[in-house]
Length: 193
Image (tube, rainbow, N blue to C red; front, side):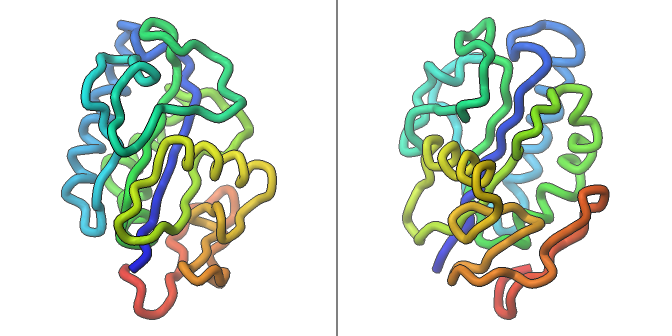
């Protein structure tokens, strides 16, 4: 049965190593989000570094998730003191559970404050795609899908929650949302909600 891979990427206003209260608050909320996600129905796994400290994303060992990679538009630092980005790579059973995790609860509260932490880049900040059971998406997979989305828009290869596709590549009707409103997209019959 296909599973949903989800990659998110954002450019932070300050480096991850910045000791400022706002950066610490971002870390605290991020920890709460991952604790909540790990208990969310439909959540399977997310990329976690086997080692590394705050800001050490490029040097960390990500195991089966592959070498850490970022989109071409990221132009800030890559060292422990200068890295200014937040990226996630996760695996879900279906669109519904991933959508619920992102747009409800503690993550919804964090989204409401995203411009406190993130720059407005004009680039997409998330991409989803279907993978076969047993496949682990890599950071490079996420980057290439996000760049494809930026260059070509939503397609079965790379899509957003609001312009979604079923595992067979058919467009999920009614999944578009106005830019000023977030609503749950409908999901195909038989998919998990």
